[in-house]
Length: 274
Image (cartoon, rainbow, N blue to C red; front, side, top):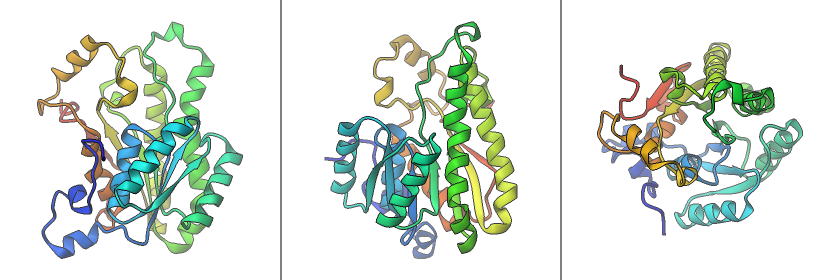
């Protein structure tokens, strides 16, 4: 059974688009998508959304094999096409192996969602060390760089590609006691904008989705008072759910967004309006 909040049909991802021409613009049939860190949470939801829109999806995990197998069972039970791949996306040799395996199994990825993330503890700056800062930079800047560089020859050859970074509202909100994460997200945002300008003439768009706090498995043990405080601030007066990212990621991966690049789409119920 599919967990609540996850899309199961192409129409669900599009909000029931009624015009066949409009639906065709969102159809990802023939595309291959890679979603890093997609065995759980938001990554899994976005992988399922891309698969429901017709793409062959390469799901990815680094460590938890049992969780990855459960995610793949869920993905296949929805009738979606794809495969799960184990690799650390912050290691250059692992990235090269990952892309090679995807090319052999599904075809060369032309849609990439950079979603993999390390733990994100909130601490004052005097409790961080540089090693932790570096881990953030590795996931949010090094990993997109390594994967993009590996895929660029093919993307340039076909003059089509969609690179989608998963950012965070914390950059806009400037949250305290979160400096390592916020700084790395700032670098990721700058990389997105620079690469968008550089790759636009090649038909490759580069954009960012910045979710708010959408509780998933890893938030299970977060303090309830912290959750209650954030929930009280959401203008649309509800929690976000993983499926809220479905339409955003399918749009930015599709032909409908071909004239959109270098942009950040906030999916947070209005938390960054002010």
